[in-house]
Image (cartoon, rainbow, N blue to C red; front, side, top):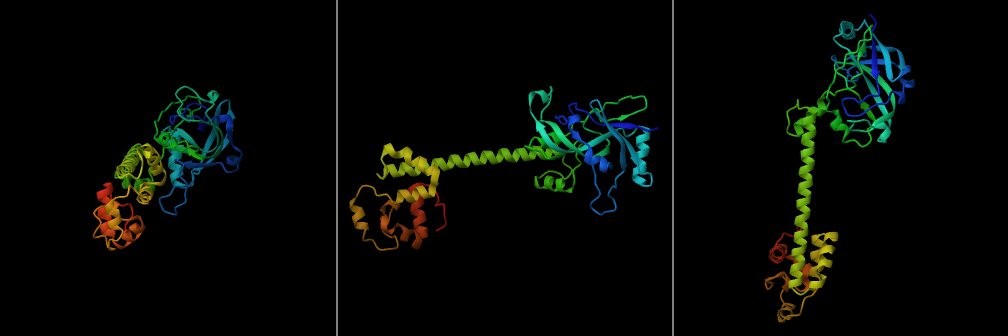
Length: 323
């Protein structure tokens, strides 16, 4: 008994978006109406790959339904098995592989319960026999037009939510391939982790990165404020200019700010005059403020460890560069 199949309707599918039947371009597919198994294409050159099952005939649009008739290659052993299950009604669903050309979030294209944009224009690339499909209307039609509704909540919607403008989608639950297994293992998950578990792990890492970034930024601002406070205490910066230098530090970074502050002179003290003649090497410098501006660069290059100690004592943090 010949069984036709509904390939698509404009109803909301289990992924949370819709594909308008009237917007599907069939011209390219009609030139090569290939029928696949679970959207699998033979390209690996291995013995377990699945060849096309056959073709779709009598492709047409009736109302809002895209309909076609699967024709199986009975000379292929696997295709013959699928055909037998199709005829018995064990397999009842087909699924459209679409190339998305245009999407819309306009109110007239969104229905209740829809989570993602409506695909208003697309090209049919292939049709597959599937075990469980995404569109509740993508089911085989028997001779008495009895329609069997099957629903499948797929994790593909979580992936679509991360893609601002997906160019190609397959309206069918995804199988975890080897690359996905590798991703799962990299995330510390078992190799058979579901897409939902993988997506949750990725979201967790994103949240962690955002938290670490915020903490790093907060620590950076705190160190900038500390450096400016010390410059105020040393008389290098007046209190009313404090916020100006804090804002400067946020723009140029802590290291550049400190270098700028180090070049600024505070009130002259007797020790400054004495230290002008202090021997190179830093033995007479008790604080970083005691180092004359004219000798700061030489001191930093020739006595990096001494500079580091005085820097930490002055600002409470390590120098940001290795000297």
